[in-house]
Image 1 (cartoon, rainbow, N blue to C red):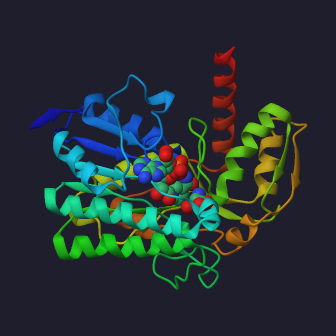
Image 2: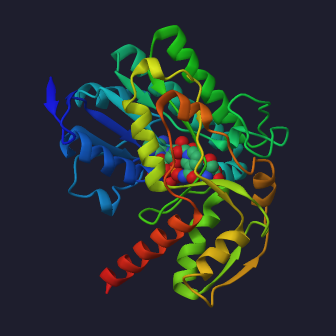
Image 3: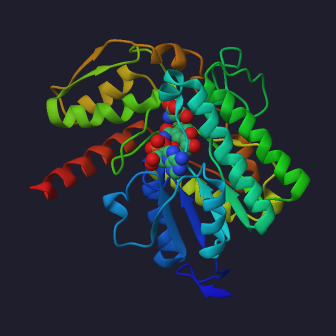
Length: 330
Ligand code: NAD
Ligand code: SER
């Protein structure tokens, strides 16, 4: 039951199911978990096909998280002990079809929590978002505990989900843990329909065309995080002793905060001719409802969270990796 890990500690052998493994976070989180637990012990699953980057690194199953019976069968058949639930509809796509977003975001979580209770899974991970905050929340350094009145269906579903996590922990002892991710920036896998996606698109456009038209106004500050920090935060949260996890809804998490004009200026240090235009669309209203920056001192106090990447470091790393992948493509 115990395996020797690379960091020279003995740890309990776990079998992990990642749901939504072909998405922006899923790909990198699955790869990171496979490094820690071994490829065969991390089962990737998604409604869509297996992401190219996952191929050959471990098992993959095609799975619809809304089909509770099939999900339950897979969890029993594969001897799963932990679930990372990443399937969701994000903020911008959610506003196009609110009932669909509510249905997927809520029912997927309830399916997983119910099975976790029944099968006595050791841990569940489910991400929340800065989208829980609304126009009445503080704009700067938004605290862990404050007024929370979300105005998007995505934010409403995340806030309700946080309380379902807390409920299953308090009532049934399900060890479910959660982070309110800021907008995530990554070069390996593409974002899936969020309001913060411009901060990924801008890098690809800068590399390919040296110009980008942002769908958010130039002065729109939002909380953001580079994917390596988000993956490390997730793993640190999940590996922390249970008694350190004092927030059983979801932890505020912070990396950096910037606006389109600020990231444009930073990119220009590497690509001098880069041109930024703006043409705000319906996503501006969503962005305007969210805080500009987040206070994550509770995560620091409870389990030692500290981000590594600021805007300058992240920009340099993104462009270096995009250059490297362009080079390897030919
Ligand atoms: P994504 O859209 O890139 O990936 C979600 C994956 O879930 C997709 O591959 C999709 O095919 C899959 N999926 C959808 N419906 C499914 C179903 N019925 N059964 C199985 N799989 C299904 O999203 P992401 O950015 O990787 O986000 C993952 C989680 O993190 C979500 O809960 C999201 O709300 C949260 N989050 C993301 C960000 C961000 O900036 N990316 C920020 C805050 C919170
Ligand atoms: N990046 C996400 C979104 O914009 C935040 O949860 O929807």
